[in-house]
Length: 255
Ligand SMILES: NC(=O)c1ccc[n+]([C@@H]2O[C@H](COP(=O)([O-])OP(=O)(O)OC[C@H]3O[C@@H](n4cnc5c(N)ncnc54)[C@H](OP(=O)(O)O)[C@@H]3O)[C@@H](O)[C@H]2O)c1
Image (cartoon, rainbow, N blue to C red; front, side, top):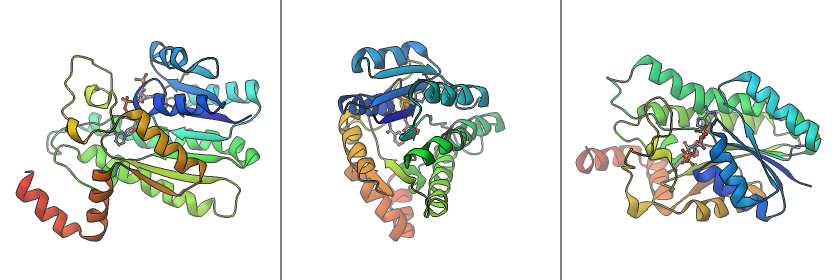
């Protein structure tokens, strides 16, 4: 039996990953704040999907989630720290409350998820998966807080890879480009609002199921890094190898 825990499993990438793992006969625990979204993932994926209410910013919720997994399955093979949202706004206008909320969910929530999971993963020789973003490398105006949170996720993950080097646990860092999900309809307080319009370029967007299949293959191979979408790979390459050229192109054509 393989047990997978996916935070933010009630929509988007998390849901698509949950369905992919359930299809491979894994037991999949999906967590998030909205139970109705998690139940929908269960309806789509069947009895192998186990919804659990858990806000990653609350230590009590995380503690209860890991206890539930231990009681019910006695093991955990893969944790996918996926819960997150994108705070948008010009850096000069973003309030400290917005900054803190972004970091509390995307970074501290992810770190805490990993810390609670590691004891069980060490027993199973399992795997940590961290949902970063191409924006860990590539900058866009009005995305500074989100980019900073994802750059920190990548730094955390790459340090964890070193620290886990002599253990049986591996860590895969995922850098998605634009993937269909609810992320463009999350308000400044981190809540889903279906009336908001997703402003991301639809032509560049991948289907969440396609992205999840590529991610799952990389996770199965225990790769250290995976970047999803062609545009994401190009952006990441320029950001890492020709950052000044990328800045010049972006400031000429995007700002
Ligand atoms: N889609 C993209 O283009 C893209 C690109 C790069 C990276 N990513 C990353 O991929 C991850 C998944 O995002 P997505 O695009 O699939 O967006 P999404 O559909 O909005 O999914 C995000 C999930 O996170 C959960 N979540 C948010 N805050 C939470 C909290 N405090 N505690 C627990 N769960 C929380 C949400 O569920 P509840 O509201 O029910 O809590 C939601 O199910 C995020 O980390 C995002 O930054 C996405």
